[in-house]
Length: 279
Image (cartoon, rainbow, N blue to C red; front, side, top):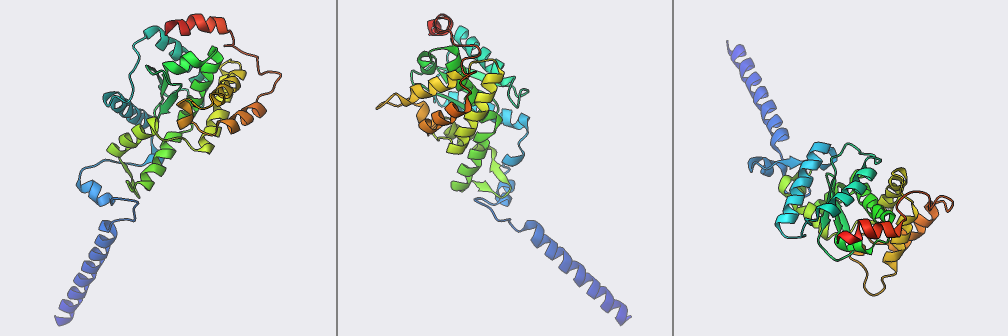
């Protein structure tokens, strides 16, 4: 009888030890860049794993970032329907030739005289009226739109978001909170420049898609040169899209002179009638 009691006691202690060990493994916080994932779970915060974002998730967060940009007054959306349709026409033409043609891209015009354009995750592209005014022809304007589309197709803002979240201590080992995704997305849209590597890749991909869409590739080179010639008053586009001289050299080497002027969008007078006259 004593032997049976002793055996049962040892079995019970063994089970308890196993449960306790398992509890430590399950409930011990994992190494993180910021808050532990346990804290976020207890607070009811949704944690986003940026590396596994689906297209649907990316679009949803892009919509939230867009809403916050408008709500906070970071930019003033244009109500010029005719101009918006023109920009949408360019955007649709290029995005359908991109590596993510099924992404529901949204193209918006911003009432701002500065020469600028930017993009956020989920297919949101923004073009300033100042940029429309600065372009000489549709190929030049289309080259900037193609560049911004490339930032989206290559998920540059998502990669940049991860780096910013880590540097600010906002990211756990399991991901980033939904509210931080939106907050950082707003920062990236209006303030933080892309890396040199991201800019060169967006130029390369954008140039490819520009040509596939039927636009003359020289438009990207001439507009980039125009930005470098602004002298003491560089356009706003250079604050978020740096390393312009190097990019001009890359594009010049990438475009075959024999086909540089082949394609649509080089009629300056048509651009004056169909775009600038709408401003």
